Image (cartoon, rainbow, N blue to C red; front, top):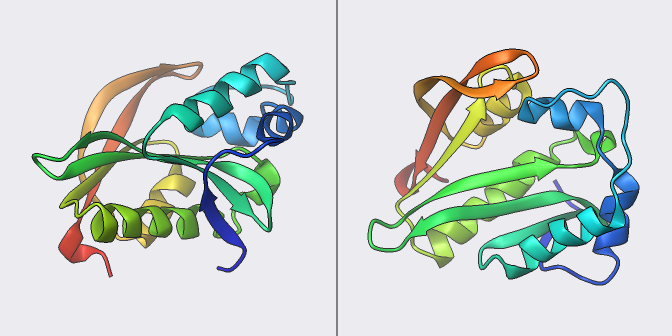
Length: 170
Protein backbone atom coordinates (compact mmCIF):
# COMPACT_ATOMS: atom_id res chain seq x y z
CA UNK A 1 0.00 0.00 0.00
CA UNK A 2 1.31 3.42 -0.87
CA UNK A 3 0.80 6.58 1.10
CA UNK A 4 1.87 5.01 4.43
CA UNK A 5 4.71 6.55 6.40
CA UNK A 6 6.02 5.88 9.89
CA UNK A 7 7.32 9.20 11.15
CA UNK A 8 8.25 11.06 14.28
CA UNK A 9 5.87 13.57 15.86
CA UNK A 10 5.35 16.90 14.08
CA UNK A 11 3.51 20.12 14.92
CA UNK A 12 -0.21 19.65 14.51
CA UNK A 13 -0.33 16.00 15.61
CA UNK A 14 -1.99 16.80 18.94
CA UNK A 15 -4.73 18.83 17.24
CA UNK A 16 -5.23 16.09 14.64
CA UNK A 17 -5.47 13.43 17.36
CA UNK A 18 -7.92 15.51 19.40
CA UNK A 19 -10.09 16.04 16.32
CA UNK A 20 -10.39 12.28 15.85
CA UNK A 21 -11.61 11.79 19.42
CA UNK A 22 -12.53 8.35 20.71
CA UNK A 23 -14.42 6.36 18.09
CA UNK A 24 -16.46 3.26 19.02
CA UNK A 25 -15.06 1.08 16.22
CA UNK A 26 -11.53 1.93 17.33
CA UNK A 27 -11.79 1.59 21.10
CA UNK A 28 -13.81 -1.64 20.86
CA UNK A 29 -10.61 -3.35 19.72
CA UNK A 30 -9.06 -2.48 23.07
CA UNK A 31 -12.02 -3.87 25.00
CA UNK A 32 -13.52 -0.47 25.72
CA UNK A 33 -17.12 0.22 24.79
CA UNK A 34 -18.46 3.57 23.72
CA UNK A 35 -22.04 3.95 22.57
CA UNK A 36 -21.13 7.05 20.56
CA UNK A 37 -18.04 8.95 19.56
CA UNK A 38 -16.54 10.92 22.40
CA UNK A 39 -14.34 13.99 22.18
CA UNK A 40 -10.70 13.91 23.23
CA UNK A 41 -9.44 16.85 25.24
CA UNK A 42 -6.50 18.65 23.63
CA UNK A 43 -4.55 18.06 26.86
CA UNK A 44 -5.08 14.28 26.48
CA UNK A 45 -4.06 14.45 22.83
CA UNK A 46 -0.90 16.35 23.78
CA UNK A 47 -0.07 13.64 26.34
CA UNK A 48 -0.62 10.95 23.67
CA UNK A 49 1.73 12.78 21.29
CA UNK A 50 4.29 13.43 24.05
CA UNK A 51 4.39 9.72 24.91
CA UNK A 52 5.16 8.89 21.29
CA UNK A 53 7.78 11.64 21.05
CA UNK A 54 9.58 10.39 24.18
CA UNK A 55 9.49 6.71 23.19
CA UNK A 56 12.68 5.59 21.41
CA UNK A 57 10.86 3.13 19.14
CA UNK A 58 7.48 4.77 18.48
CA UNK A 59 6.12 6.42 15.37
CA UNK A 60 3.05 8.20 14.11
CA UNK A 61 1.33 6.30 11.30
CA UNK A 62 0.58 8.79 8.54
CA UNK A 63 -1.66 7.91 5.59
CA UNK A 64 -1.50 10.31 2.66
CA UNK A 65 0.02 12.83 5.07
CA UNK A 66 -2.76 12.63 7.68
CA UNK A 67 -2.40 11.15 11.14
CA UNK A 68 -3.94 7.67 11.17
CA UNK A 69 -2.49 6.08 14.31
CA UNK A 70 0.60 5.02 16.18
CA UNK A 71 2.93 2.04 16.22
CA UNK A 72 5.74 1.16 18.60
CA UNK A 73 8.12 -1.52 19.74
CA UNK A 74 7.89 -1.91 23.51
CA UNK A 75 9.96 -3.95 25.94
CA UNK A 76 12.94 -3.93 23.60
CA UNK A 77 15.50 -6.40 24.94
CA UNK A 78 18.73 -6.15 22.97
CA UNK A 79 20.35 -9.03 24.91
CA UNK A 80 17.63 -11.46 23.81
CA UNK A 81 16.98 -9.46 20.60
CA UNK A 82 13.24 -9.28 21.06
CA UNK A 83 10.45 -6.74 21.48
CA UNK A 84 6.68 -6.51 21.65
CA UNK A 85 4.58 -4.64 19.11
CA UNK A 86 1.73 -2.23 19.81
CA UNK A 87 -0.29 -0.63 17.03
CA UNK A 88 -3.42 1.51 16.95
CA UNK A 89 -5.28 2.94 14.01
CA UNK A 90 -7.15 5.77 15.73
CA UNK A 91 -9.20 6.94 12.75
CA UNK A 92 -12.17 4.59 12.23
CA UNK A 93 -12.49 5.77 8.62
CA UNK A 94 -9.04 4.25 7.98
CA UNK A 95 -9.91 0.77 9.29
CA UNK A 96 -10.01 -2.06 6.77
CA UNK A 97 -7.87 -0.26 4.18
CA UNK A 98 -4.60 -2.14 4.75
CA UNK A 99 -3.03 0.71 6.71
CA UNK A 100 -2.41 -1.45 9.77
CA UNK A 101 -0.88 -4.22 7.68
CA UNK A 102 1.43 -1.83 5.80
CA UNK A 103 2.45 -0.12 9.06
CA UNK A 104 3.17 -3.41 10.81
CA UNK A 105 5.31 -4.61 7.91
CA UNK A 106 7.25 -1.32 7.93
CA UNK A 107 7.79 -1.61 11.68
CA UNK A 108 8.88 -5.26 11.37
CA UNK A 109 11.39 -4.20 8.72
CA UNK A 110 12.88 -1.76 11.23
CA UNK A 111 12.82 -4.42 13.96
CA UNK A 112 14.43 -7.20 11.95
CA UNK A 113 16.65 -5.37 9.46
CA UNK A 114 17.73 -2.21 11.29
CA UNK A 115 17.59 -3.31 14.93
CA UNK A 116 18.59 -6.91 14.16
CA UNK A 117 15.94 -8.35 16.49
CA UNK A 118 15.18 -12.07 16.43
CA UNK A 119 11.60 -12.00 17.67
CA UNK A 120 8.61 -9.66 17.89
CA UNK A 121 5.50 -10.60 19.84
CA UNK A 122 2.05 -9.12 20.18
CA UNK A 123 -0.95 -9.72 22.42
CA UNK A 124 -4.45 -9.03 21.21
CA UNK A 125 -7.94 -9.49 22.62
CA UNK A 126 -9.37 -12.78 21.37
CA UNK A 127 -12.50 -10.89 20.29
CA UNK A 128 -10.49 -8.54 18.04
CA UNK A 129 -10.79 -10.71 14.92
CA UNK A 130 -9.83 -7.87 12.56
CA UNK A 131 -6.48 -7.38 14.33
CA UNK A 132 -5.79 -11.12 14.55
CA UNK A 133 -6.35 -11.49 10.78
CA UNK A 134 -4.05 -8.52 10.19
CA UNK A 135 -1.27 -9.96 12.36
CA UNK A 136 -1.59 -13.35 10.66
CA UNK A 137 -1.39 -11.66 7.24
CA UNK A 138 1.87 -10.04 8.40
CA UNK A 139 3.34 -13.42 9.35
CA UNK A 140 2.56 -13.63 13.05
CA UNK A 141 1.66 -17.07 14.38
CA UNK A 142 -0.61 -17.87 17.29
CA UNK A 143 1.49 -19.11 20.18
CA UNK A 144 -1.00 -19.34 22.99
CA UNK A 145 -3.79 -17.81 24.99
CA UNK A 146 -3.64 -15.99 28.28
CA UNK A 147 -7.03 -16.78 29.77
CA UNK A 148 -9.17 -13.97 31.18
CA UNK A 149 -6.30 -11.51 30.91
CA UNK A 150 -8.33 -8.36 30.29
CA UNK A 151 -11.33 -7.06 32.19
CA UNK A 152 -13.53 -5.21 29.71
CA UNK A 153 -17.04 -3.83 29.66
CA UNK A 154 -18.01 -7.25 28.28
CA UNK A 155 -16.42 -9.11 31.20
CA UNK A 156 -13.17 -11.04 31.22
CA UNK A 157 -11.58 -11.67 27.84
CA UNK A 158 -8.68 -13.82 26.75
CA UNK A 159 -5.56 -12.42 25.13
CA UNK A 160 -4.15 -14.25 22.13
CA UNK A 161 -0.35 -14.29 22.18
CA UNK A 162 1.27 -14.13 18.76
CA UNK A 163 4.84 -13.92 17.52
CA UNK A 164 7.03 -13.69 14.46
CA UNK A 165 10.70 -14.59 14.11
CA UNK A 166 13.23 -12.81 11.91
CA UNK A 167 13.52 -15.85 9.65
CA UNK A 168 9.75 -15.83 9.06
CA UNK A 169 9.65 -12.20 7.96
CA UNK A 170 9.90 -11.86 4.21
